[in-house]
Length: 599
Image 1 (cartoon, one colour):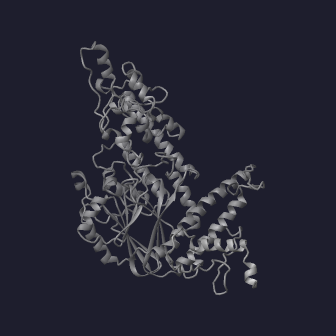
Image 2 (image 1 turned 120 degrees about the vertical axis):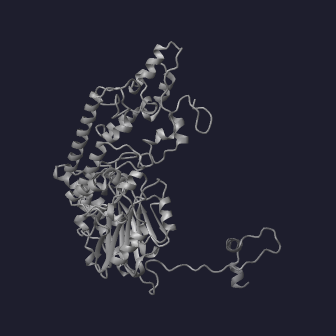
Image 3 (image 1 turned 180 degrees about the vertical axis):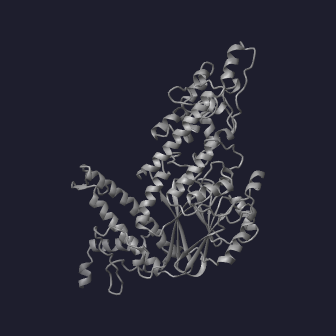
């Protein structure tokens, strides 16, 4: 036998056959199996190591002592760069809003974050867009003295945190007419920019555009009012076609990029587009619905949606790396500035954590927490260790420098623009001075509302009876109400320490600010969202029911429909609200919107 024959033992033959089955598939009884040419698989080169012809770039070593952010000017071939922070759709919200979720935003947190950001990013610019002064966005709401006082406080706070310009919308001018707004803003040193108001109606001192020089590039910011919604607005703040207004300003100033603010909603903006080119490269638009896209491209225009109620500051990064004016969608070139924005926000958050830990250490506390891993070794939780957080800061600072370098090396056909959000979470320390000013404003108005209620004579048909009156005849309805979230609405305010906030009490108590309605927790039976929050004052109804002996039908309450609910469950405070599904959760003895009964 040959050597080959001697090696072909039964075991060796079986192993060889098994290998053929794995490589080509085992026979399945078919006498003429299909034969396929299987192309060889070409593996990509390894990311590290590998043959000598593969370039490897090991990351620089992270040194925890180098945890501070470097300035952009230190980066090689760094292009001109605009970092813009802005707010829009503030809707006169001066405090952190907790509807829905945890409280975020607020001027006291905005001041803290801006102070920290400017310390490390001195090139930041800050402006405020439309719908800042008013919640009355339809033009049909009844405005009171308290609303105007809050609008003036908003202006003061905008100026205090260093806002460089205000771009009002029609709702803002309905709250404070142009003459009043011009007077108050001038006194605060806050420039107002409106680009398409008729010259005859534009107050002296208002600007048609805001011009910024960024290196050898020129950025023009414009404010485009929406079409007046009422006859009163048409008299107070008449407008000209926005496209024509922008075209005139473009011809005069020859900007490289035009950034626009508007309070016009999507339907109206489409009408503008049908009339011709708007002439704006970047457009900041109002919040309309929670499921809407935060950013999108419309041809060569980049649109960013506002983050409502001041829950965060929007950020725009504009990199002047283009050979031609204007902006274009360029995904590859957007990666570096997007990474940079994320890295800088992470650095700011970690820096706040580091400062908080250092304060605890200075007070003699040891914030460090030890965690035992799966291997049984006890290690420090990096999030509770000053050294651990400082190492993370150094890592982020290094990655941020690399992003700057990549952005600087990327030359593009047009300039690059990306959007982001600078969040204002609940763990941000609040600026004490602003907290005190807001608390004083709230206390003043709460006292005035209470004093007005005490001296106001309430008509029979507008008197409240409270749920204690209703339960006498409506035991089943009282029981169903007790199983809803409405019964704990005031408790939610207490948990967020907002039970003295007039803005919140409107929706978390019954009849607040109305004659005979909720006035003071200590002596009022109208806590929470009770029956009369929806049905209206019903004390007279109860008296008629008790005295009629069943022969008279008591006067009815208000008609309950979707408009009743959306006074509080609006798209901002209750983004998941759906009338079809929410009503059955609180209704009693009524027909469901889609048919059937709620009981």
